[in-house]
Every structure is written in C-alpha cells, then in structure tokens.
Image 1: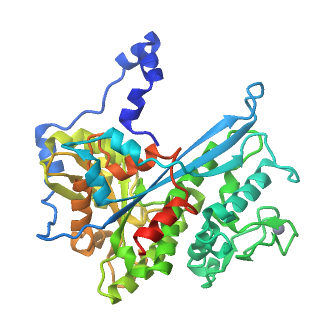
Image 2 (image 1 turned 90 degrees about the vertical axis):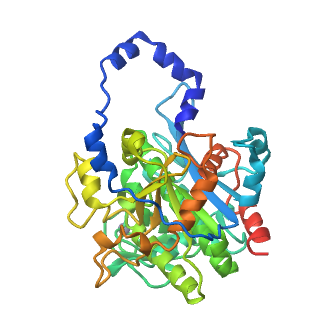
Image 3 (image 1 turned 30 degrees about the horizontal axis):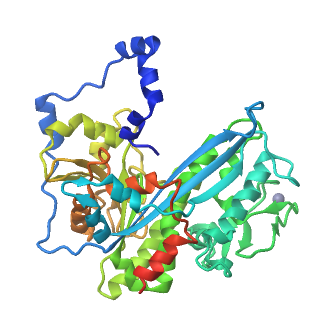
Length: 463
Ligand SMILES: [Zn+2]
C-alpha cells in the first residue's frame, strides 16, 4: 500500500486538487478538532519513557514483506471482465548494508536503488469478475482452484521437489493448530468447516498433490478453502474484497512461512532476524481464525527458544495508515520525544475508536495477535507498531489478558524493537521505517519466497 509521500509524487494527484469541484468540496470540509492544551495533557499523560537497556543487541538481518493488489480489465472493450493480481514483495538485508545506505543523515536513493534485484515478486493471478478457468463453471470455483494451485506451486516452496515446503503446507501447519473440532493436531491435515458446494462438513483434507473431493457431494475441495475467501467471490462483481483479504492474509502467512523454514534449517538463526510485517498484527474477515493459530505457532517457537536461553522471535507490525496513525497525527505535537504507550482498551475506545462499542472480550479478541504501541523517537518521529502477544491464547487460565497485554515487561523484545525502529527510521518516507518502505518499493521487482530471499537466508543466516 502506498505511503503518503508516494501519492504526492503522482501527477494525477495535482490534477484532482486543481479541479474546481474538488476545491469546493475541500473548502466545505472540516478537520477533526485537535485537542486543546488541557485535553492534550490528559491524552499524553499515559506516555512514558520507553524501556532502554545499556546494551542492546540488534538483529543482524531484517526481513520485510509488503503486498499490493490490483484488478485489471482483461480487455479494454469489456471492462466488466476482470483479473486480479496480488504481488508480495519481500526484502532481506543486513543492518550493515543499511548503514552503508546512509550518506550522512539521509538515505542515499542511489544506494537504495542498487539494492534492487531482478527477480520477480511472488505474484498471484486470480480470476475476478466474469472470468473463469476452462473446466470450471463459475468465477468462485475458478478462484478456489487457482488460489490453491498457486499456494502449492514451486515458486512458494523452500525446496522445489518437496511440496510439503510450500506456502500451502505452512497453511496446513497453522490450520492443524486450530482449537476445537476444526483442529487436527497433525501438520499434514486440516479441516474445512464446510464444503463450498453442498455446505456439509467438517471435511478433513490432507497435504497431498492429488485433487481431493467432498465425501458428501463428490465436488472438488481444496485445502485453501479453509481461508473462506470463496464466500466473498461473486461471478459478475469486482472481487476486490476477496483480493485485498488474500493480500492481507499473505502478508502474515509469508513471514510465518520464512519462520518455519529458518526454524527447520537453523533454529537459533531465528534470533538474528527481525521480521517486519505491514500493518497491525491482526487478521480480519473470514480467515480471522488464523490469528489464533499464529499466536500458538509463535508461542511454540518462543518456548523452544526460551529453553535454549534465547529471546523470543522479533516480529514487528508497522502501521503506516489507519485510525491509530490518524490519531497520532492529531496529538503528535503534544507528545514529548522519547515516549511510549501500549494502547489499552479503555484508552482506545475512549479516544481512538470513540464511535465504536467496546468488545465484550476486549479489543481485537477475534482478530489481533499483537499489541499496539505508539512510540515517539528521541529524534521526534512517531511510529505505531505492534509486537506479538506473549501468550499462547487470550484465554490462558490465570491470566488477566485484557490488562496484562499492555504491561511492557511481558514483551522481552520491547527494548530491542525500540532501538531497531530508531535505527531504521528514515527521511525517505514520512512515519515509515526503511524495511517496509523498501519492501513496498520493491513489490514489483523484489524477491520471491522460493527464490532469492531463501538463497540469501540460506547463505547469510544459516551459514
Ligand atoms: Zn460437498
């Protein structure tokens, strides 16, 4: 997704602003009222000096992913016939390389450009409005088949000959950890809640290459049906919702995919890598269940690391837009540099989501796997970031999750995350840090999971 500054670079933006109707509209708009001095004091009193350690060891490598999608008409003469594209860019670089990018205070764009690689991004092509694959009756069935095939394809595998290393297999690993009757406890098995054709279920599927069929109606079923994207696919409308959902799912699935690869190949190398994810650590929509599986998966990995005396995996969700980012803009001038706040539910519902009814089980109960923080660096730049909840589940017995989730000391990696964000803050993009900015810039020309990133990982992290 684009950054603020990126819009400004596009000439179309200026054309819009020059349009008299747009100018008239803007003249009639009012901005949200910024808080008064007195209100601001109350709003910012919750911020405190972030935890700092005298010696912080930063990860050597940064792995960042970012996605984008678009729908294109197949043919200019029939604009209602559309195909969807999703690209996920992944960038891996070392902190040392990053230091070399800097020329004095500023990141040298020529050196950034030199980091470019000719490999193509991981791209998904999916049928959208009015397009079906041969042998399928509907857009929905075509979408399901195309998605499953691409998740399983060699381009997503750690080892091309072994399909158990595909992105679809990572989905199996997560889906097998579901709670209740949809969990299987076996990494090569998952369950669909129901068959997309006849509606009966649940149906257990295996991680195998052969086509699988519904035991009730005999129609084809696919492991990736568990993401329930098909429920949002229609034959003649734009399928933008399903495409954007899938992009978001991939933005979370791919870091876990890499994590699984590194955990298998060289477990302790996990502590040398920081994973940057675009946006909050949350999954929305019909696949929101994935967030619980990710919590469980991270917890398992972290438990193993802890046994070896190592800190947990450093995963950072960075938000560059959305309600919290808007809110921070509003209060930013009142925030002192070097301050941090872990957003609690009371504050969120009172000030940030004032129009929303508080959720009974706490904010983000069905969607979030990480805690949001607002951080203003010593240099005076503000960031909204998230760290994974240090819990296996939000309902862990004996825990008061709603309150404990905002306690800094539970996030072992917090001082490292803060140092890292400070280290990576950049003048290139407003409110952005370099990895996500790079990942975004390189969406079109970046590295694919089965290819260059894995080569680099193998060479550098696992050496
Ligand atoms: Zn069926």
